[in-house]
Image 1 (cartoon, rainbow, N blue to C red):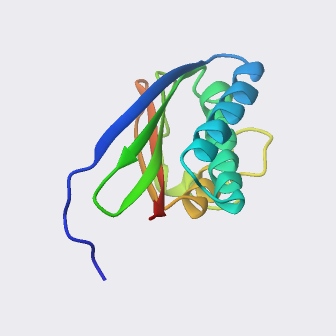
Image 2: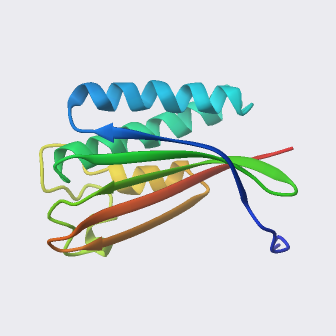
Length: 143
């Protein structure tokens, strides 16, 4: 079933720099605060925070640092949180491969991108080698 097309409003936004490990923790706390204030249940808060943690870690470790934009969204029937992670790092040469469970160029489990996609309602990634990566995820809450 498809939803009727409505305009999504951004009610509030905040940008956070992601440079060091401590920024990953700070972004996780900030996302939990926003999710709680937006009325998400505990399970959904946990999904949002887990995705945020994974993507923030990717931004710091593989992207060489970047930023997180948190947006509180509203449309006619629901509210949501959109998280945009962007960096100007080396980029991802093969996004399809990077989205596979277990694939990693580092020491992690290779579940950051694919796991985040499963945890959120919407997922988009854009990357260009030598120019950086942007990942946008959204979680919606029905009213």
